[in-house]
Image (tube, rainbow, N blue to C red):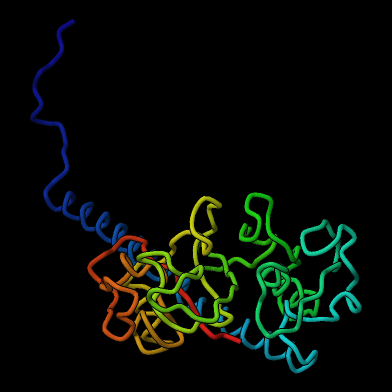
Length: 268
């Protein structure tokens, strides 16, 4: 049997039809990108909501117990004593440990972990927290939902810590090159990525310089080295080349990769 090779009667897409298909594909791609941008914007706005919620919770706790969470000296009398001993022993339910009442979150007593447990035990934040470090790092193993709350910002975790001050040339724990700006940090929050125990104490970078700049501008002064919002990891998140450039540094807005952790110093 012979097959015809006459293609003259076969139909094909016209230029108009191809144009319509390309327009539809463009709309779909544009819609997807716009949707992603909206989701990202919503996640960044949620950071302010979360920070405000925790600030209100701490203030309510202080009004009720006359001390900051984590530092509370009579917590075990209210919520029970950790059966495995303090500060690192096993515990169940609301069992907890006492703080030393000095107004700072003392790391050696794991008050920075007790902070979240005390707030949750008091019913001021959602969740249930262990009040102690995770198993991979003696004092700084943060685990989302286990000993610290996560964030709506993808893979984000809220951490509390304390350093009274850091200045260039200090021999204290804040002398990491390229990380800390000079300043008095006190008790502070950080928002970073879920931590890798082999990395620095604050965990992994989470936010791009542009996004943190947006956040800082809305909540504070837009300066990464000073104010109520600051940048951790200054050597890549900002234009600073020295920790002393607290007022002259700017965010590295041309760097579109994730390079920053947000710090909220002297938070309570």
